[in-house]
Image 1 (cartoon, rainbow, N blue to C red):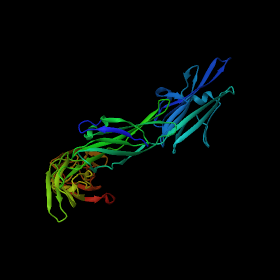
Image 2: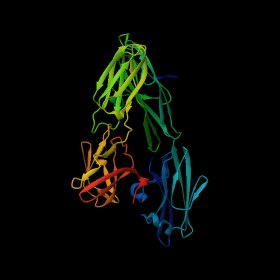
Image 3: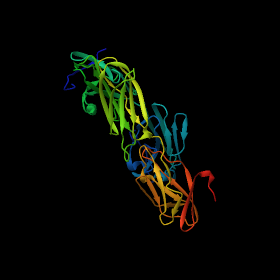
Length: 447
C-alpha cells in the first residue's frame, strides 16, 4: 500500500447537531386553523422552549451516552404552542423508538450504542386527523486515535544522513455515514506542534517522514481526525503528542531529562528539591538543587544502565521523596515521564495554650508543611453561628464568642484540598478567662 510521504529538514518541517424537525400539516377549511408538527432534539439540561434556541429537523446527530430530550412541537396558524399546552390541542401523541413507546410530546432518552435509529411520531387532533413524521437519529461512535510508531520518546533515530521515519497510527470511530479526513502535524518545538501541519493523510494508512536529522534532535508529532456528514455535521479529535529523538554525536554520553511538577504548590510555601542521579554502584553521578514548583532538569552522563533518579523535597516534608530507575546504554536522549510531587497530608492545629484572657480571645497554631493552609477556606463556627477568623503566619485567632460553655468547630483546608480532622473543642468561660478542652470526636459531643 502506498504511504503518504513528507520531506523534513532540520529547520522546516516540511452533539451534537441540535436539529430536528420536518413538518406535517393539518388544515381545516371550516375553522381556518393550520396545525403543523415539528421535531426538536435538544440537550437534556436545556429547560426552555426548544424553538427559542434550536432549529427543527428530521435528522439528529448525537454522541453515545449523551442525554437528550426528543420533542414534538406544534404551531397553530404559524405560532408555536407552548410545550406545556401541547396536549390541550391534541387528542393523542405517540412516539415509537425501537421496542419502546412514549405517549407524551417530550421524552428523555440516552442511546447507549452507536448506530442509526428511527423514531416515529404520530399525533391525532380533535378532528381525528393524523400528523406523521420520522426522525433519523445517528449516534456517533467516539473517535479514538492511537499513535503506534515510533513509540513515544523513541530515542534511536539515525542522525546526520537521509532517514525515513515510518509514522503509524490507528483511528477508530468513523461511522458509515461519515467521511473522514486526517492530518499529520510535526515540529521540533512542542508548543508549535498543532500549528505545523505537514498535510492530509489516509486515516487508515500511515505516512513516511523523509529528511536529514542532526544528532540530538527531538521531533514532536500528532494526528487530527475530522469526521463530517453531507448535511454539515462535524466532529473532531486530536491524538496525544508523541516525540522521537536522534542519537547523540558523542558515542559515550547520554542526556537524561527529568520533568517534575509540584501539584497545588506553592501559594504559601516554597519548594526546595534535590534531584540526584545515582549509579548502580551507589555513586552520585550528578545532582541539582531546585527552587521552582515546575521544572525540567537535564543531565549529561556517561552511557550506563541501572541509574537511580532520586527527587527529594528537602523543605516541604509532606511532598516526600520519589525514585525510579532508568537505562541509557547508548548515546541518546532519555525523556523521563513527568514526576508529580503530591501533598496528601492534611493540616493540623492546636491551641497555643489552654487558658486565655477573655479579652484576647483564642489562638491556634496551624501546621502544614506542604502546599500550605488556604486562609480563605478557614471557617469557624459554634452551633449555627459562623465566627470571624483572623489567620496570619500560621496562627488562627478568634474573638471571645463564649459566655458560658460552647462547642467550637474549625474547618481547615490546604491548597492541595486536604482537610483537617473532623473534631470539636469545648470552650468554657468564667467571665475573665476562656478555657479550651479537647479535641473530641464529633460523636462525643457533651451537653
